[in-house]
Length: 616
Image (cartoon, rainbow, N blue to C red; front, side):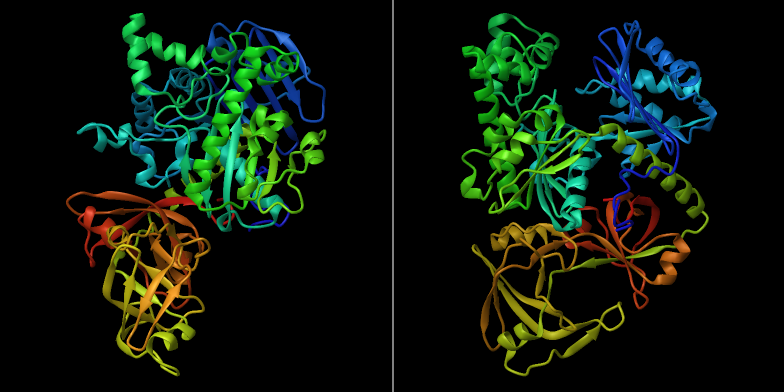
């Protein structure tokens, strides 16, 4: 971690960044600089400003013209006597929250805007998600601030690690095979911020934790995070899916929609508007989409308000259970967003009937929630098996952080274009790493692994010994053991072998075995039940220390690599593993390589850094 007091650099901003988060009904902005933070919101005919450490103030302003409202913000920042007196030319960048990333963005979470990306974003804006207003603000600021870098920060990038099984819908062919019609996930910036702040408070790396983050605000969604990787979420191709929220319906029976459209004579545009604007808590109560108002009304005995709150929390608990099963357990449940932070009753109701899963609230701590000025608070009882936290949402800070990282990657990648080295590709077949204890169980007391052939990485070898893998469904014979022995036994299999064995193995870094499934191992002298240790290995590159220095990288960087051939592909989420003895080589899983028509002996080209250690 980069700093014991700020390991994910969420508070320290080495730069001056202006953030715009242009939603459908309002524009939120924030200025981050060493001297402090200024925040504002344009909506409902007013411009509200909150300088950090100062009381807020509000001014009437016309916001019917979105671009004129943005110009008003720029004028305030430069010239208003109560503003920061900002010189716009001093900005390092302007960061924009963008809902969906196009393919040309690669695998980065934030990308400096150029003409190609701008054109791709314009095209993406025509999809079922509405980001036309965001794009209008972005275009306008590129014109009025031509000398300032504009950076697109992708809200859905947090969910790129979702496995295909969590992305796909049961659509008819050929729609079922179109990735553009798969689940994407949204509110990723808020989910990521909540996870990092909680990991920091727990004093544990986020890469070691299984977490469920619950963003409960005007919109609402859950995310399951397994050892730093999002593996499931409640929103879908659009933000309309998943949880009931203030005005969005959440999940619905498709047959119900078809029935209503036929009965009421509604077209898709009008039905979309109603489900996004007139549904959810507003539709259930008939009076308000504001949860705090409905809780007050429910206490006054208003039956529809009571019914709306009950439906909301029942729906929330049901989806929490689904996230739990995606993780097979949980270290922390995190509440964030306006409702998640401000409604103790909703947090309590969400955790009710969850005692069997180890969730126990401390009622006093839950009632207190976040104290004045507090950003993170633990609200679990001492005997709770799962830690429960409340985190103040700060989406704009996350946008600023990702913007600065996008700038840094942009500069590093430009420098690196002159330092390209071909990266040899190795296709990694199934294999087993054994501890000495398990070597002796499987092959006899005192047995030592015998080398059959050296591997490319110095000191590593393919052993003479082979084992049989026995799963709940089937078995795989003659699986090679690799040496030397390790502290923990680890089994690496392909996706296809998962189905043959009847095991659902997660994608993990080598050695990251907590919470993974096990199976039976059989050798020449005996067999044993392995409690855990079966993984699908995350794609990775072995590099020497000289390699990482030449390429401007660090150990455990996550990079993007382009692999040529008949169908050139860019692979993201490639982990750099650096050691002085390593020889340069990228490892891909057998199934992944076969699908991409990649074979051992081909080479790849480094495209850029996706993230750095400690930045998650």
